[in-house]
Amino acid sequence: MTMVDKKIKITIDGKEYFVGSDQTILEICIERGIDLPHICYNPILGKRNTGNCRMCLVEIGEGDSRIVKEACQTVVRAKMVIHTTSRRIYDLRRTVLQLTMSQHEQACRDCPTSGNCPYVPLCQDLDISSTVVCAMCPLQGESCNLYRGNICLGPLTYSGCNAYCTRNGSTCIGCRGVIFHEDLIRLAVIDYNKKGINLDHVIDVIKLFSFSEEGKRVVDEIERIRGGLE
Ligand code: SF4
Ligand code: SF4
Image 1: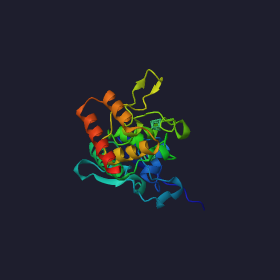
Image 2: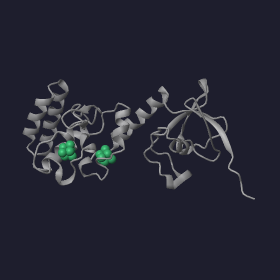
Image 3: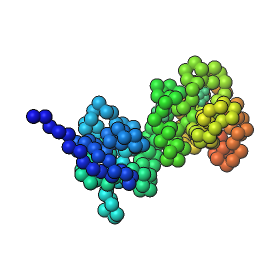
Image 4: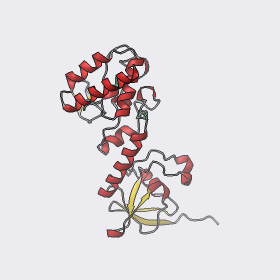
């Protein structure tokens, strides 16, 4: 006798679904095209996924008794009510991603993920200015401006406003402003030095594009790091 897969009814963001009773919330969202962020999830691991990235957090329940769970770790139950986009979830995801990015060494120019980085869209969605333009730049390897000896503020510029760029005819690859994260500025300075790019020229270009106090702060930081490296 074969077992008949039992379907149960659940609600996700106000919409009802009939789903397999042994599925996780994340599996269902992926299957149904419901946009739920996830970085570490690997479908091959199935229920052995560990939920480390905490990006797939959802709220379960109604009213004041809602609880927060990782969607990749939670198997559905009949009549479960799931919320993927509440204010609480947005704030939690944002905090988690900020913590993640604060620990993440952004060696984007040498990263195999560059150009297809999973952090860039998440940082944009959650309004976090923590990924540098190099993470989404199409000019990788020998095409990179720095590799060719040209100045580029990519390593010092945070990525993407998703605006339409009339010059390139594509989505903006980012000129939103200089990045303030001290570790990222340090990485950029080391990178410029390695490529033999004159830091004075870099500073001149920053001053050209960023007149604000923030631009000045970054220039001061570059000078300080440069002094320490000499
Ligand atoms: S491209 Fe993305 S994953 Fe790679 S180092 Fe940069 S931020 Fe990290
Ligand atoms: S330094 Fe400039 S050209 Fe090179 S990867 Fe970064 S943004 Fe692209």
